[in-house]
Image (cartoon, rainbow, N blue to C red; front, side, top):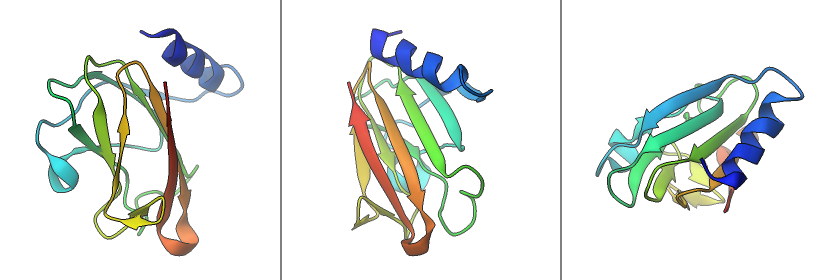
Length: 123
């Protein structure tokens, strides 16, 4: 695990009990329609066989109820692509994705009023 990701996981777990959906495998060539479905909270990817293997955020039309934040911790050997749900926007762009580098993490915050995820990746 990278120092960056260890620091994020420690920060997320320390102030409140945040469950970590651990040990995910990003979907090879899955794209937006077949990427591994993420859940709210923290998600730790440990396998991405190819650069750009995919994950998909919960749809803002109903699945993303609750906390409204998704964390993607990438401890896989390759970068992963995190897509918004079909018909949603990511950083204002319809059906977009964000690349999260190996050893890095991404933070995704829902803006339900306009079906948008605001996101940034860190390394």
